[in-house]
Image 1: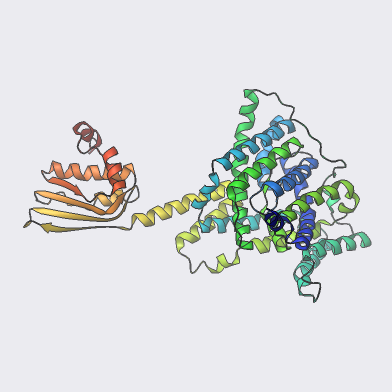
Image 2: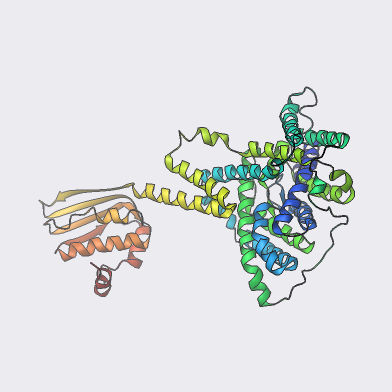
Length: 496
């Protein structure tokens, strides 16, 4: 027990502490920006980021992953806030938490097995592009000072690690933020800072219950939004967990993460915060800065709150150019550059799935839609590929009076038409034997195709024998086949 706690919390004290501070600094402008997107006060996003990060540190299934208020979730809240107000958003946040806990107990995280690697790569690349695009407003219509500060920040981030002695001991993003803030305060240059993003809270969050009627009408108002928030939140969290798994070469408990996200969102809603989920950008910052355990997530949340409440005057002086430089570093580090090189090596179907996921996600700014399109395309390509792995051979027997058809492969909706077209119904033979010992029937479409084959042979006066059915195929054929039911035969073949 003690060894487990030590491993999960205190095995990387220095790295986790410094990484947590860097993440906290980067969370502040994002939380404020996401609050503005959702149409609520900046305090709502900041309180949400604090609550979610602290709670998920204890309840989550992926150590070292950062969860807070996110842009993907904020985009889904706009209409609810505009039409019904903040209190209904808090109620939707609570319901989102409940639904996510239920998803965890139903083990819906297992559905991640159906998300192919090409979809995950497309998701990662799309997020990298969206993270970069989110920085463009800070780089348009500005003075040269902003560009100079941003370039200087990137130079520090990528150059500092090469310094002897201290280069590897202090996270370069933290150095970037400290140095550029000092330059900004000394020079007094006229550029945007965190303080220009919105008013920072001056009190700790307090417990509150959403001031909405507890009736069915309220439920029907918030349920559609809660369902969307649940799906997008879990999808982004599971994807991020998979990416952090790869970055750290460690496993995670995805179902526990679902429950943890739910508990964190309930806590956020009860403290006046909006719903959130895992953040790939901040998680990458955390890992790249040396964060590995739950302690880094906890420190990020606690330091975030302490800074915005007690050190607001200092935090408000951080130039946005410094944080833009950090997020550009995240964008560059997140993007899978190998996927560009692999375009020539990978199959066309894999490339199409990856590029479609990127395009749809970037165009809609909706991660759920992008991943759905990617999964759908991957499934279609897979079905087409498996459907083509079907061989049907035949041979004469009994001096030409009988023909034996041997089926090898998978018969389902994608291959059923090809299966039906592989028989010669006009051949003059007394008996046809269909050997299915090396075939597998998967669905009703395949069974209906078999029915049509049997019925067409019988209409030509040919006796049909089915042999070699494996247990699974025999079960589905016995349950759904109708070639021995005259009434059903007429109904099936009625259109032919």
